[in-house]
Image (cartoon, rainbow, N blue to C red; front, side, top):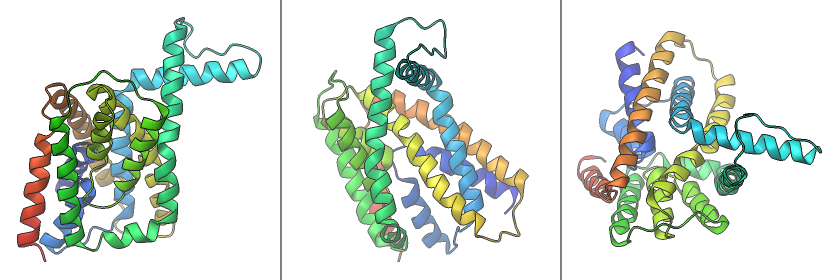
Length: 278
């Protein structure tokens, strides 16, 4: 792999990981169309870490708030106070961040369980471009339906987090967008759109870490004579930068109430793939 390919793949990963258009689906269709096989697991791990950092940087304040809240709870359990940030005195703010942390843990359970139980089934689905095309129509339908739901101001409850977690688990299949399905599910549940998007991105952190951990295990068992640290770092940086841009762009689209427009894109790609890809 050369630097140009690393940049291109990094940009593609950064954009498609967070935009509701299915990064895995585009990978399967791209491999089939170009008659190539992208099986460099080491490079894939670097790309995933780049997108992980994108979420951490964009939502650093919220993540820092959750770290503070967890520290306080840990201190309370041990009979004392443990504040990571001594300037933080708002108990309501702390409780909200603790609740958010618990919601993310709950929402991560379905993907964790199903990812382990159905790992082989999911891997086999990556060999079928037809399946990807059908799933793109499925994703597009979810996105399009958000058009008919009025803007709401609801907060995320534990049952909502569990349903959104199930949506995230379904997105392990290629062609189903993780951000598309999770944000749409939040909108269907009457959650404020910006909050649904923020929760979706934060929920991706355990998922990305889990996927990276599983792939890292494969890396240890894989001989990779083409490993080039600098080439891989270039891809990771591109995935990080364009991941940040994609998150900011999607949040802006959601604020403007145009989320369903990504559904039209999924319909188009699904239709074209049925015609041109065998």
